[in-house]
Image 1: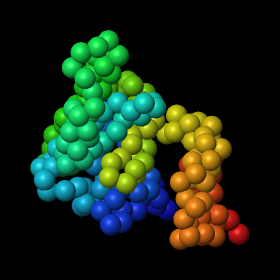
Image 2: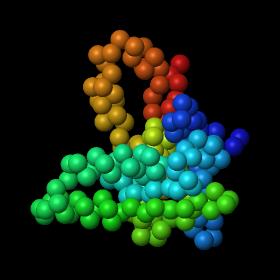
Image 3: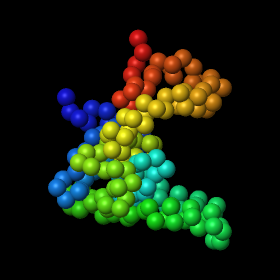
Image 4: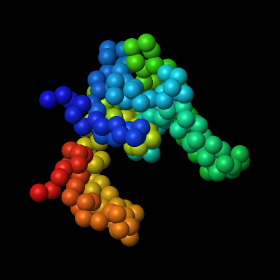
Length: 181
């Protein structure tokens, strides 16, 4: 069974999970299924940013520009808290080029934030991807189920289309959706 068994990309959204190994130079190959829907407007560019959690966020140029516009509108030019946020936000970003083989190098300073080692786990997040150390992700997802269930209830319990279908799936400790029987 392929290690890519959980990767699904639908309606040009990034979903599912994909384990990737880094080569001896610290490069990762963008999975073919992800690269297939990576927009032409990104012209072989990947934007990596340190996340709040110990992970990296992977954006296309279009999504990155939307986020930058939002940040510019909300953050002030002066003030200690705003400057601290600027350092965290802008200092933790790297614009990377894909080489002809679809590989990119994870900068060490950014990779340290996510404790990137020889293997990473890409998690689809809709219009971006998260990059995790697989061990940290398993620990993180195991510690979070109650929070996820509460948020899911808050977001969807009042919507008629949510219904019974949502209760058919539960997040397993491994972080994958499992159908209840």
